[in-house]
Length: 431
Image 1 (cartoon, rainbow, N blue to C red):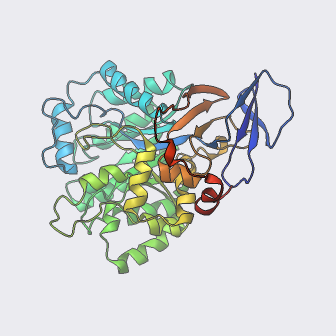
Image 2: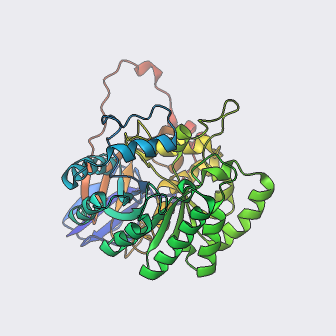
């Protein structure tokens, strides 16, 4: 099938271009393409970007917040883990799949095409992992899913946890997970980081660790994770999720830490909405923001991305799979709102997440790559971020996953009409 998606704006391009797609692959990209094809679709000059990427979510937990016994009264991370531990024993593969499909649909209809989900393997039956492995295969034409073999209750705090993580890798999980700050003793936390690295090397897997998701400034497993990844040369395959404690480190230590972080080439995943909600619970005032040093990591040239994390689970009562909402919260909390930062903010939920998931060889609006992209109700990245715009269309392998009809508003506010000829030039950069 040959298709021409006409009249789209791309980041960094001053004029609109056309996207010529053949058999689900970008064949030519440029202005006013003259090609023969079966279908021509005019995108009305809207902005096209690579699909949204959610590199950190727990699909086995979604929509369990109202389950009996699951209510988190303190709003803390640790009560969330306890509530989950006490209520997860009756889960079934089919029930998990139904909830996960609901969440995936919510994300896909808001522009997400790539998801990394954690599967809790601190369960001798590995129920969640089995469910998510089935979904990964069943939904592969709609969404790309990676799975983390994740010990929610600890590799060593939970009896046999490390062995269950390894079994998850044998069953087909894509990444090794860990949660060192939850282990009962510092030495066990360090041991879990070493085990994570060892398992990744043994099975040639990626790494995604819940690392220092705490306000405790003495929680410093990030340093160990980055150092071991650097020594083994696997930084590009390694992601440190949350790293909230870094926001509480003293500047002398943080300055020293930045060197090994840069050398290691590891990736950072930030979950702004969840950690703004969970962290600082033990503070009076001033209350900490609960997120890592996003701005400093980004300015140092390290790869950092944003993620949803939770949708109505014991850790977070909200969440909708709308990454534009996550982005908006994140750039406010991180104070990343210069014009240049907002021009590039979409990278935090697109290309940076793809790099974290090691997808860049097949991701992006480039000739020769799969024709996966979304169209936003905006002309420029700045406009998209400022107005928190919705997704007008999502295209995967050259075909529409969905396309929304333009919004129609019946109004008598015509007397407020203003000329956009000069306003746009002043407020919005041209691409």
